[in-house]
Image (cartoon, rainbow over all chains, first blue to last red; front, side):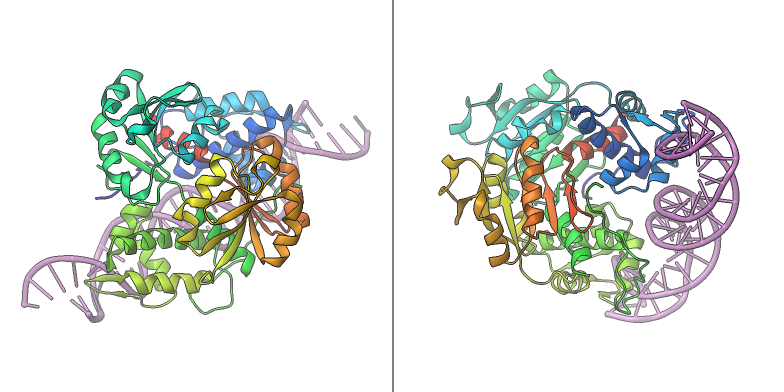
Length: 222
Length: 222
DNA sequence: TAGATTGTTAATCGATTAACAATC
DNA sequence: TAGATTGTTAATCGATTAACAATC
């Protein structure tokens, strides 16, 4: 009834191929990738499982285990080569390519997202920005021009967009989600606080910084 | 060496009291809280474990299990009362009160955060905003005036701030994190892509929307 | 009552960790 | 060589799930 869940099958993390990764392995590999991407920017050439552990809060044994399931990527006594580990993980996650995303909402949040490196670093490109406020149409955000909501369907198919990002107020989120679904978007990234109703084949990820904060606070308070 | 990790002890989720919750239970309870808060806004009075499951992507049996460890909060055949479940979970997470947060960076992202309900809904109040750009000092963001970085230490102790939120470019993040640590902040919420080095008693949470997206994409692509 | 949903059990599966030989 | 760190094993612990009696 609600957001389309990701239904994983049992997975073998042994690198033998066709099976899906388990939810946990896929999530952790994504996190390693984030740290590695950043480590690369900082000019780091190798990284140990212990360093990765410090940054991801994942046990170092588990990191070595996760990685060794797909090959012998490390050098004993040295660690992992950052560059080659990045490409290995990208290959495993099959996210080596470029992916186009559409952003909805050209307010402060939308502008922050469009101008940040966060998505760009991982191969996501904001190729279209929409807003329902006529005053914002035509405005430039970075190199992209804000378009009216009516263009959505057309742009989604034209530009091969699979991810829609909602940077709008909670009250506006559901109607836009409906439009995205109708236009064929399969992944919705929801930055509003609204709970979205979508068909089961669509995945909704709701960003929840306050939830993360509550969680961090619990361990601080106890 | 890196971000301070949260080191949980073994926990009994049986409501008998003093022990810490496990990482998993605390994380899930936080997510239930987010959904319940939103459901309440939408005027919902009761909610079933199945509905909670639809929105959180957590198995409904596990939700009932998580909750029943602390008491019999539900009514068979009916579900859980939203209001009372919110206060029960707040009690369990010991986050029933107000918490003050300091925000660093008055750019698009900072403004988006300060004006959103996301933190406010969960009892977090942005009581101070800092920026290192002299041009921004004195500017109003919502009801809060942007202050110079020099005020940081003074404000943190004055206003009883435990959480610092970084909404600054990656290159600026580490020096500000250092200042926050020096001022006594114990939880840093990092919206930049930088990897932060902090002492072990400080918890860093790095927001990683692109990582979440990579992860969602993997399951879409396979 | 009939239908729905909780609370709980029992069985399984995956995550986690310590330890250490292999080896760079 | 000596030190460091991987790759891997084995043992444990917690998460997950199906199933169903209890009961609203």
